[in-house]
Amino acid sequence: MITTDICIIGAGPVGLFAVFEAGLLKMRCHLVDALPEVGGQLTEIYPKKPIYDIPGAPGILAEDLIRNLLVQIEDFRPTYSLGERVEAIQKQPDNSMIVRTNEDTQIHCQVVVLAAGLGSFEPRKPAVSNLEYFEGKGVNYMVKSPELFRAQKVVLAGGGDSALDWAIYLSEIAERVTLIHRNETFRGAPDSAAKVMELAHSGKIDLFLQTQVKGLGGNGRLNSVEVVDQNKKHFQIPADSFIPLFGLSPKLGPIANWGLGIDKSAVLVNTLDYSTTEARIYAIGDINTYPGKLKLILCGFHEAAIMMQSAFKFVYPEQKLSFKYTTVNGINTF
Image (tube, rainbow, N blue to C red; front, side, top):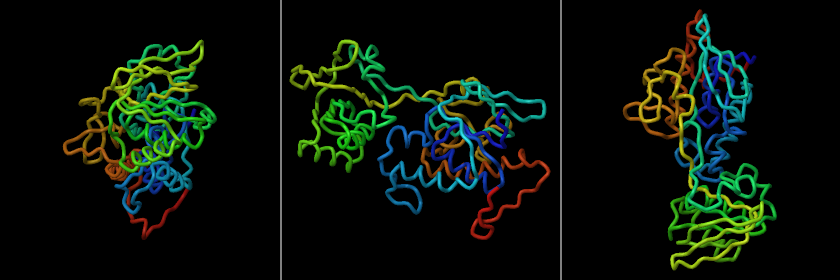
């Protein structure tokens, strides 16, 4: 069994910053995330996307923000259970809790913090014939390891940030990248869209606009993608991998069954300290809701700072919290 002060469910940017705020108060953290690496959506969906609303870091890339957060908390030595999903929270006679994951990992803690973004995610699957047949045999819904696509013929479908970012990134790795988009304009960042257009004009990738994927072909393994353009013309594109990037559908998953106050797939909190309707369980970041809520990383950072002040009383019930600015007190590690 893992013993810690605070179990944070979700290792995205808000969960990572919560470790820092806890560390300032000498509270230890263990993070659990269903994804195989830290960073949440920033790592999984758009690592190359610039983020503009982080104070003091104009235009920072998503992956760089995560890297900086990890540097910021490394002295507090958090521990992790990655690639695991929390299934249950069990209150103990002394009011502490045991968090259990689908891998039967058990974390004994005094406080639980929900920082799971929009919850667990399932990919939005396009209406493409043979799609599920080729899952694991050429069809991928996320790019978890870009090196797996080295020297491959890769067909991407989508028009958002994720599709644009991966088209740019994989153009340097894959043998050939083809991007299919059903509209004539992109939804993603204008800078990324411009880079994709430039790559297409220079012949470094193939770009088909106002075109849709209709079917997949292959004998036990994907070898072609069938598309149809705005003129109803069908044609085949050779492919080793097909990656449809139409976003993810958020689902609260087991969290919805924990007896918390829920409103429109978000957890209700008290803005005094971002506590939920269950004692010792807090919710910060995109997973919570309250009047005036803004789903910004910046706001999640603020919520993390406030809630850790409240969590202190459960971890150190005999101590009085005396808050000091880091500019005066510095950062004392364990």
